Amino acid sequence: MPRVAFCGIGLMGLPMATRLCEAGYPLTAWNRTLSRAEPLRAFGAQVADLPSVAVTADILITMLADGAAVLQVLSDVLPVLRPGTLVIDMSSTRQSEARQIHQLLASRQVAFLDAPVSGGVLGAKDGTLAIMVGGAPEDFARAVPVFNVMGRPTRVGDTGCGQLAKLCNQLIVGGTISIVAEALLLAEAGGADPAAVRAAIRGGFAESRVLEVHGQRMLERDFVPGGQVKSQAKDLDNVMIAAAEADDLQLPVTERVTELYHSIQDAYDEADQSAVLLALEQRNPGKRVGTAPTDRFQVPGSS
Image (cartoon, rainbow, N blue to C red; front, side, top):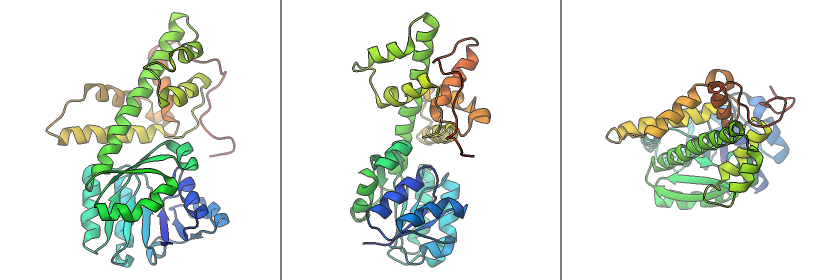
């Protein structure tokens, strides 16, 4: 099996790397805070410093905070990457950044796929992530067995198109979460039981994964992160950048949703993205969804 290097052992990276270990891939891990990669040793992985993680890799996967972090890490390991290595960036970045990374790696005869994911921490644990891939067909074919361990891969076009597909996904997710929050708040303010309203409309045209998962989070006021507010805000910013680059495409709903997420970033940066409900409640004093006495933002014992 190809030797895999995995850079970025965070909320998503840890379960993704764990699944690769369990599938039998020889895996070496790196994280800026090395202690966060230590749990992978129990699954047979090695933990290395940044340059050494890439020396013997056949496939190098990055799962980092943003495009700047990906570019920095890949620039640092570029001198030790062997020609023929396949780099797969599964972070969420800009389309232009994916193309820049592709050009950087091509100078060393290193192949590249941009392959951002959707499905959150639960999808990463279950191996059910939606994986949107941009790059050459032959590189995609080479990566499919690795992708299949983590989820369902679909090649959507050439380099950068994976990131564009992810932005389309995040536009729909961010907008739908906001609308679900507004619907539940409207039900509460109008005197209906929000939980009963959610149950009543499920199975109709309003049914969605967002209504199922994030609607329940809002009712329980459980904002322990799967996807974080800061990640959703960053992705929506990138949607607006992509729209501007596409002949100044106007996306008025996306503009408003982006503003809503930014309005709670200072207070709830690391909370789950469904905490957008709190932004709506702040605009409507005295209105509150759910009966939980307190809001949950962190897994007990975490920091």
